Image 1: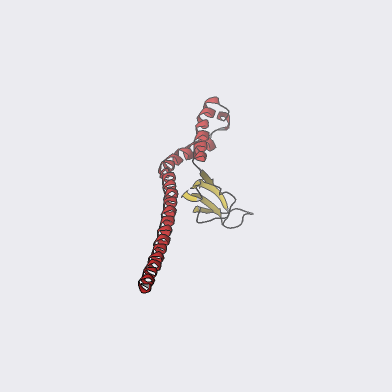
Image 2 (image 1 turned 90 degrees about the horizontal axis):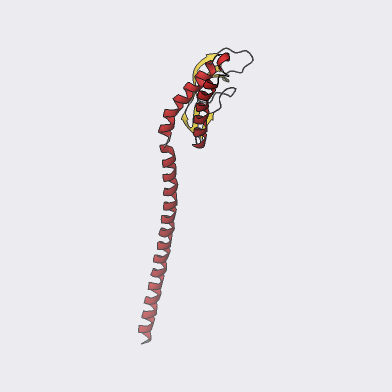
Length: 157
């Protein structure tokens, strides 16, 4: 009888040990699954936010044209109320981009960085260090610190 009791206690301990192992394994898997769900939600949020980039890239040339017109505008037309009204569209586009977390890449006066800039040409400029950006041909933009359009620039040689 004592032998039978020892065997039952031994089996009980064995099954208790198995139960604890299975429980620990289940708890780890559950924690892994919860972490997976969190990571997937983050990834899906990023995917949705980056899905707008294609539309943004189609809007940027329109903004470029507004800025080109504004820069080439004769002085006598700059105070015209109709021209000011049209240029207000540029301000609205910039505000829209800002709300979408799109930032301009600041270039002029900065050192050339191939991660943000593409050199279109070099210009001889007195008093400027070689590689300093002196002219911006096309503005660059980034979204969440990721470049979506590289800036096209001229640098001092």
